[in-house]
Image 1 (tube, rainbow, N blue to C red):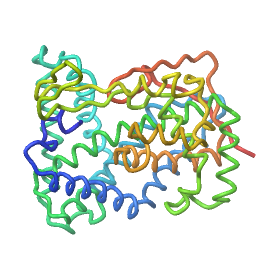
Image 2 (tube, rainbow, N blue to C red):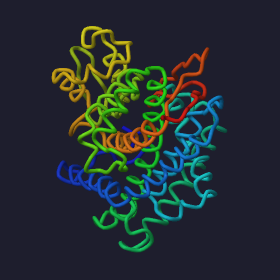
Image 3 (cartoon, rainbow, N blue to C red):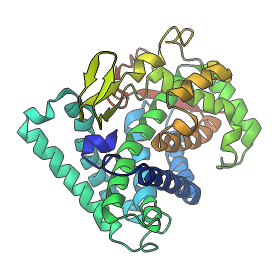
Image 4 (cartoon, one colour):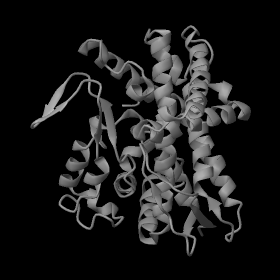
Length: 360
């Protein structure tokens, strides 16, 4: 979907075998990046939790600002290497990322981008600058620079510079937004549900003890997985899916012309009362049922059908929750009303606040 919106090759004009190969390389690169950079990810999370632990209980903590910052650091450093340990590089990336994503999330879908020459020029300038950075990384030989970065794993698969740039753009754009907002909504829902927070704490202690989480231990954190699944569902994290119709299609008597942008209303299905009991209630226990997991998987949110960026986000969110919940209690801010803004990824309309206190 994102490749189509960016104007990149999304499968049209290439054979099925090549398309599947690109997908396999992309997913494999994300998996290798996580495996070989897991200590760095853990360090980034621990630094954030240390910062929160230093706050007095009365201090309001802005989730959007802090967790978007975490996602930006994680994705840029894991995707593009040590160059992005420089805060100035991350800030520049964030500025361009926000300019591009704000238009992809709204301007393309409602057509307003094409009606504003100044907005379009700003978008194209930001896109060109991000593409330039990725192209410079793609010109490296495999093994140069940061050998364990996402981009380097793509280079090792002998993709062209253009293909590396496109895949790097998709991962950095979608990876940041999905990761940040999965973490934001998960922490928010836990802050308003003390019972869920306590149950998650007991699972984390039982499985991990005092040890840091590891990739090998993550599959054992079943209730944590349920919490994240329910976060995706309740927040309607990705309320729409979209793709360009590559050939002319037909639904009943309706003809869908080639190159039509087709929108799938996933958000409606995620809170359909015929599928989910009490659909507006945050209840991770519903995902203990096999039939519920099957429905979730069929929608593309779990298992082999889940997009690679969402699987990456689940890993980051699991590291965050396993570190945060064992050290701190999260509390809602009285009187706060959290409203959602629904675009390609659901975000809070305004920053969302919590307070924290140390666990005994």
